[in-house]
Length: 72
Image (cartoon, rainbow, N blue to C red; front, side):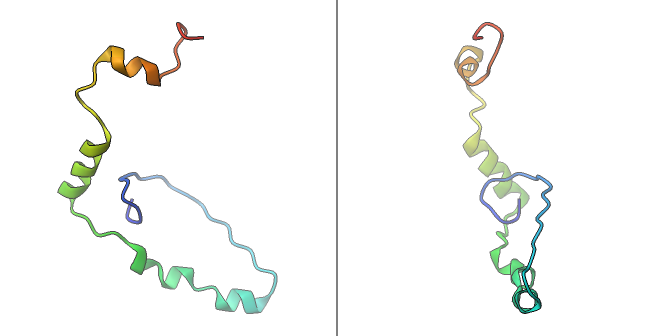
């Protein structure tokens, strides 16, 4: 949520492996992480969601996006 323009919160696990100690010693992604953070207020994030979701769509219009028994 803090590192993209799409407001979402999904827990993720990243596994990083190294072939040698030199590679490990040079790995500094987490020390530089703050520079990639996108600072947005709660209101800005709500506006982002409103720009993605069309709350005015009719039920018939939305049916084309969902797999149902009638379609199968």
